[in-house]
Length: 449
Image 1 (cartoon, one colour):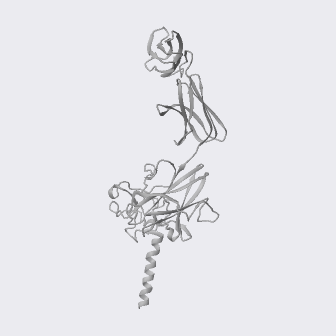
Image 2: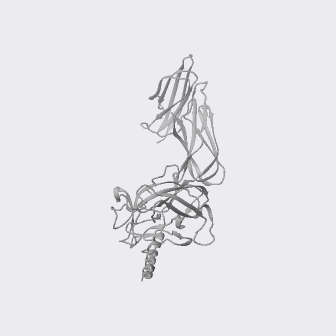
């Protein structure tokens, strides 16, 4: 009889332990739900993101019940009652040589700086117990033949940071009360460039607690199938199916990095009397909407113009912009290259010196015609008493823009004609220098509304 009892004990032990290496199931452990929360990743950004990288790819939501968890945390709720789902998380333990895999599509050349993964260990508390991530990227589905690893391995720990994501994994029967399964957000370092195409990420995880680590699947209210992820159990690949519905699951991860849409080959600035002419060229462009031209003023950059880009091209393109709103002094410029999706990058800065003029001069207003505002530039050969006035076509004075002492050099004055009707107007300068010289000039401008 003792042999029979021993045999039954071994069988029961195997039946109980083996499934817990594969997946955490509600039927097996009511306390094995750990919430990975990304219900709407368009509004909830990764909590550990430091703002250095852009989100290149988001594989799917984890949170489907924001703010309903213990202490106001978000919840990733297993739909155990409404849909009959049973799997809380999938085993991808390094110690058992288990791993997960899911795919992503690079829409253009990407520099992937880091990838954010989600995992939990039951009863870990909100201090992360995750201490190891192994990651490799394949050029195809790793579960079928013909695919190759093109980056990474399953021997190097690439974990850079980990912390609680503010999410609990729970079931529908424990929502709002269960905090046993806090989901950890972990960043791993990649630092590699990938051309456009479809890739598969394989990853496995280690931690200091006894449970798991477990990978919570993408969670979307009302859906039983959330992706096409795979699970590798000690060398054997299979679809990552929920234990209750037998439907395949996807896994939440976020790829962070950058896209360099424009290859800038030159950028110069040259003074031309009281103007600065900027010239730049590009070797290639990808999704380039255009360039904001920015000039530093009082220690801060401000936008002074815009030039449209050429979208996507492999041809060399040349650009020019003239800043007509400068006086004498030193100026710093930069380009803000803007992509069609809002991503932007700054160019290197260039400096230029605009020398003080040696003559009196009144320049044509810019822009002209204008609506409703324009800028009038003038230069003084010496310190002068200056008057600058606006007249209509019959000589009636409408406004006085300047009436006072000004230093020698370049000056610009803004004129807002919002209160005037369309038509032709004149502006007149009179300057009396401290050295006895004098200057007077009149120019025409056109207001078009």
